[in-house]
Length: 99
Image (cartoon, rainbow, N blue to C red; front, side, top):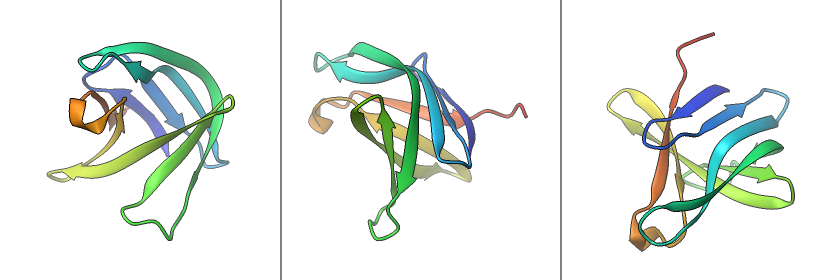
């Protein structure tokens, strides 16, 4: 839960306990080297506990997106791969320290 800020992209992802979400600057398309289109808006999220590794399924409008999670040392990070994973275009999110 909480607000997550893009560390390498100008994006914000807020995940609420009631399964609502809000995004700004969320990357959805790339040209293979950089993000070419972003979206903003409200949506919802869920996690399927049977899928490993766990991913957050995010719906903004009618479009679905997958948000991965991982660790960087002791820090949890979220990430969104944009376009072909082989291109390496992604947005990495860190949890905001403000309450």
